[in-house]
Length: 267
Image (cartoon, rainbow, N blue to C red; front, side, top):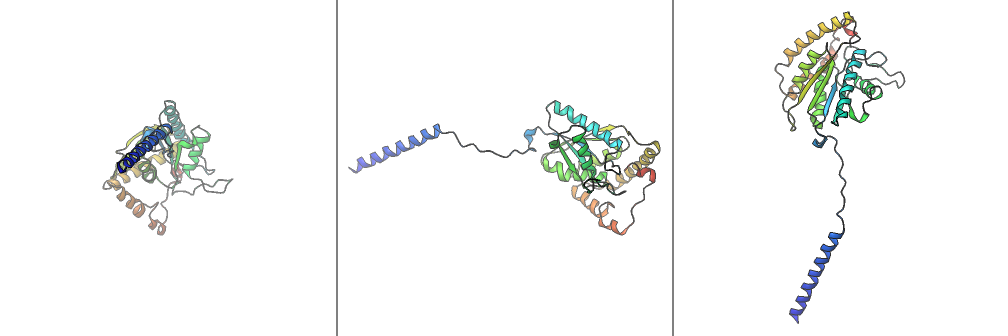
């Protein structure tokens, strides 16, 4: 009798197991919805088109030479999107230490260069708002590059950059971006690929262009000397916030660096 009970129990257990498996086969597995990360590699490593700061009018609008950068950036964006390639545009800069930021006459708020150029890209040049990112804190080209990397590219995993700038600004832009985007440690995603597209200096009067070109050459020489021993992101952070007179708090005990009236018109 005892053996008969064991046999019956075993048979019942087997039947239960078979029924459970049959039900599992009939019922679909529960669907789990995972959030989409727009920065993961399955977006085919998007190219990022970068527009450095170039100054605003008193009304908070991009200067003509900056609009030329935006025109080229929008063209590159449209070409890549047409080919089905992932593409973003990042606009840079809060302003300049050489003159006050403009104020929006409607809202009363200050207008950053990144905001003004992003607005132009979206409203005038047809770039999708979801593909435009801003870095609106930096005040010069060095921090343009540093904060682009620290805030956006290192974190998002973007590795391919196309930097669009005017001819007068390109030599220093190239030197700075090549330096900053080679600093150690590089992110886990690997080395950066940085290329450059130069556009004409449209809208700059000859005397203004001459003054700014001379200032750019002087600034490039200074950057070459200053950056020679900077090899890490930490060292760059120390330089910017301890020594650079646009960011270091010791700037507050000194007068602002004078800029010639003609060169100032290019900011």
